[in-house]
Image (tube, rainbow, N blue to C red; front, top):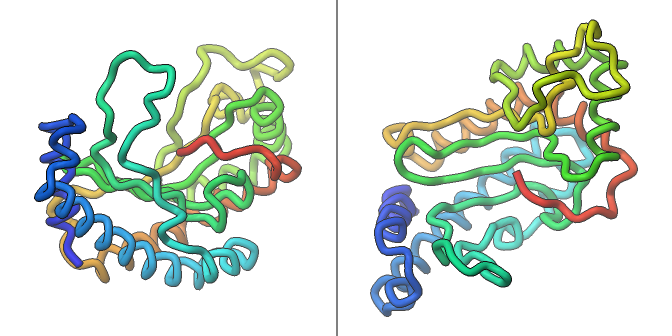
Length: 232
């Protein structure tokens, strides 16, 4: 199991992002080996995460298939006339079911160039979901603020210029109500990607700090279980 194989493969794919290169025998063997490393990493991570997250997510992670958590490197090009056919990264939605909204889980993204990150958050693509999260933040701002502070990472995501209609511009939560997605993440430099065990330990400790915020968003979106998950 090696980070180097995953990082080197992504860098090579980014330079030669075409189907001919991807399917060349030697390159496909590199892809298969790197994917096996990523699967092993997820297997360890999901078990370790199950020990620090709430029971709802923890139980799902114990029985989750790490292969089912992964996003495909080949992109869905249906209806697209241009763009690279592959995503040069290793990505996984660490939940119990990548195709269900709840419970919200964690996301892992491995890509060279300091673009590796681990995080969580609420990614909303429907107006009713946005409203639910904004209402929860406004009504429980003390709980939300405490969770953000414990997380130790800034909230990021698409946001509006003004407080959305229906909310008070003087609300103490006004700046957070402008967001259209609320995401938190820890970024890793390439030099930090050495030992699988050390990396998993870092992710688990990060999740421990992020867990109150993840649970907050999960509670806010209760009732949307049937909607498909769009991604981090």
